[in-house]
Image (cartoon, rainbow, N blue to C red):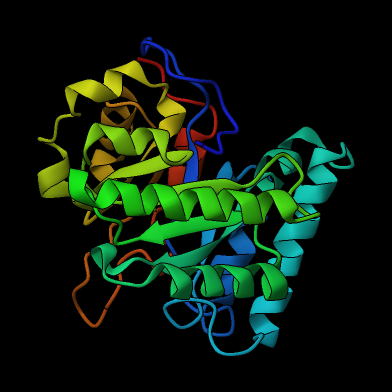
Length: 274
């Protein structure tokens, strides 16, 4: 490990690769068809999106999720084979990741592997999002064991054009050793009030910006460019920003599109200069 698809560690420079969108998990495709349709919209710089049926793969294949997964997978395959215009290919290059809930290290290894196999067998996902991942040093050996197993499962999958992807959903800066256990780490997940004053851990400077992701809710449209600059300064190559804040019945602020989705996509699409 890690099952990396990018470059290895290196000192961060002022200009990184093009930022893109990571979707922590939209609602069920039947209830959020517009959100899922946006994943393949031309010009949307999608890196990956998480599929979560019932805090995992569910108990049986879901026809609506099968359809959504198939559309994204087929678009990615066409993009990788050069069968789409550049703008459309950029939108279609994203992977679908299966949601695995580690419960901060409380779930047994066997249960997680079983869920992963179901995601691969039913939805042919292109990787996994390990939600509620431990962040302390004590949890690292078990996470390394799991990501090694998942990488082997992905290597066996015939559909993994361009390699699979493993993302650790810490939501905070973990013990540095986790950076070698997966492709990407979510080092911030929270509200704008905390994000605007946040600082990246010093050890992250040794890695390229493709290794980190940030998810920010409660972000006003007027501060969107500021948030993008913070993400780039802290080395986050994948982001999701929303003005949703979990109030007024919103159980998960990341489950729907922000009201400024078009502006968000257009601002990170061409890149933000420093």
